[in-house]
Image (cartoon, rainbow, N blue to C red):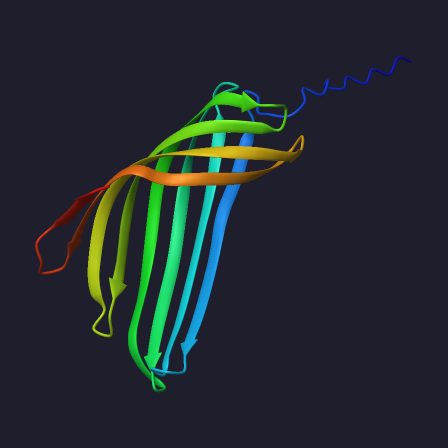
Length: 168
């Protein structure tokens, strides 16, 4: 009998063709202003998944959901919810030592939502570019620091209103 055990050699810190990245942001904010009796709660969840086509280039998808609610003196005065979906491309261009990997990212996305007690609806389109850096805590776990939308364009249209666009 012959037993063969092929073990992949460790390549150190970084990404390789075929790797998958999973990222996300989770935000919760609660404010209680005793001066104005205004309470605000906000929640957002934005998962992101990418696939490396090469050691330096990844493409992926991202989703987002969010909600907000405001109460004044115990009475609901505003509420809203939103949904986002998009695609992105990320290029790693500079290694700062073994554990720091810098990247540039560009993305396109769609959004829709409703805001206000009358549930006024909106939809929009956006494009953005940013920079970021990953710090590898281990060979398979990194902390991401992103400067998103350094350059961006957004277009939003509320039902019954004219289109609003912005370039930042």
